[in-house]
Image (cartoon, rainbow over all chains, first blue to last red; front, side, top):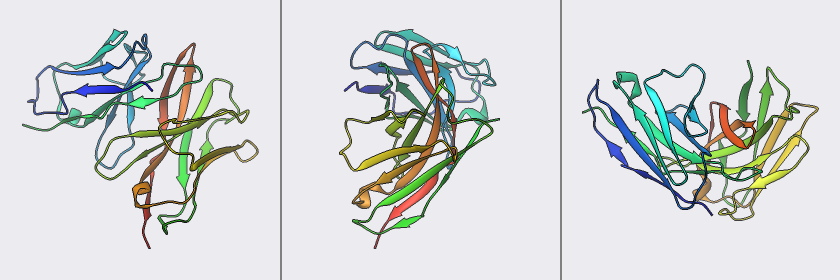
Length: 109
Length: 122
């Protein structure tokens, strides 16, 4: 099984900060990595797919990069509505078998 | 716009079977570009993928989970379903259904239901 490890598990940035969240896979997954945002009591929302592709309607301050085993989600100019929990997810296989990271919680400083 | 809606009991007794249904509206469950998935989230914890199904009936389960889960599809009703057998308190969670988009060899969950809370308790 492919394991996904996110870091850090929590973060307390300020509005306007640039935030970077890291996700590491236990083996190479090419670019088969997605990022989701989840707010309390809500379903997850797709932000980035295939490592670096911005989902339609997602603000351009969100960006993703990486391939192989190491990936990053960057949020530039953090906004109040960005305080949430972020999950990475791998989908490396056909048909896809998914694994989520443990999540990174952005808390207001 | 395609939407998903989970339905099922909010409370299940230990050792019983949990049955959930996801109804797809605004699109066809029989599209060759989509898979359909179930994901759950225990209280205060992270997301866990349970399994996925293709409209042809091909099913893929999380190998880390024990074989208490069954996923099925009913194309005539535009629905897919999840059964969890012999539930315990550890199955208490919010259960989500999701549409899995396929783009070449990339797969991602781009549409989610709102989730349904299931509590296992006597």
